[in-house]
Length: 302
Image (tube, rainbow, N blue to C red; front, side, top):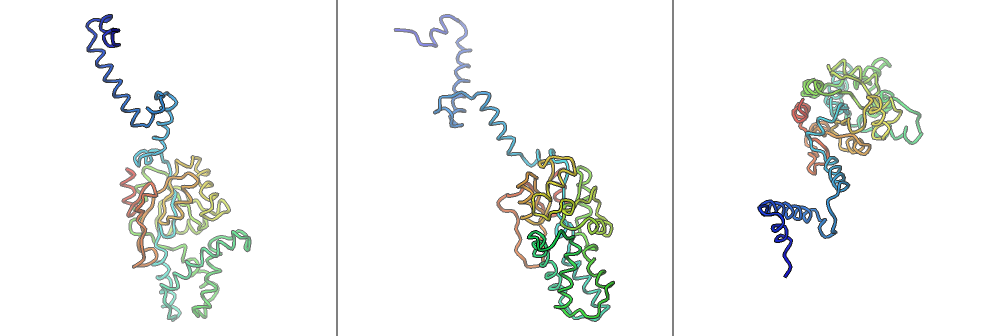
C-alpha cells in the first residue's frame, strides 16, 4: 500500500510533523475562507487580481471616518439649510405692515413667495426666459404677490428694499458656531442658486464665515443641474469625491451624489413651519445625517 502524502513527508523530513500539521491547519483555514467567498466551487485560487478587486470594492464602500478625512471642502446649500428664510420673510413683512398698515397673513405670503421660486427657474431652463439672477426672479414673483395681496402704495425704493429681504435672512441658531468649527478642518463655501451679490450680502448681514462664496450663477445653471455642482468642484481645484454637499433638501443631495460628491443631510424640521413631516434619512441614503451644524462638526471631527 502506498504511503499517504503525510507519511511520505514525515519519512523524508523527520521531526517536522508538527510543521506539516500547522501547514494543514493553514490550508484548511484558507479553504474555509474561499468557501465563504463563494470561490471554492470555481476551483480557483485567490489570485492577486481578485485580491485587488476585493480591495477596490472595500475602498469604494468608504466608512464615515475615511470620508471625513478624504474630503477637503464642504459646500452648502443656503436657503433653509444655513438660514431660516421663512421666519425672516415673515419678520420683514411684519415690519412693512407696521409702516404701511397692511393686514396680511405673512406666513402665507412667505410660503407663496418661496413657492414661486421653482417655477420661475423652470422658465429659464425651458428657454422662456434668458439666464436670470435669483434677485430678479424674486422680484418677478414679488410683483405678482403685491397685486394678489393688495400691497398698495409701495414706492420703487420700498419694493426694492422688500425684495432684498432675501439678502437679510437670519441664520439658524447653530449656523455660525457650527460653520466656525467646520472651518477649522475644511474649506467651507456656499453652493446656492442665490446670486453672488445676494449671498455676499447675506454673509455680511448674518456673520457667516465663508472661505468662498460660490453660486450656481457662476455656471449659468441652477441646481440641481449637474453643471452647478461640477463648476464648484472645478473652482475649488478638487475632485468631486473630495467635496461634500451639505443641505437640508434630499433632492439637492441626490443630484450632488450623482456627479460624485459626498453628502451630508442636515435636518431642519422648522424650515417650512411647524407640523410638517420630516425626512430623517431612515434608509441611510446620505453619507452623514446631522441634527445641526454643530452635530455635523462633531461627526466630522472638527
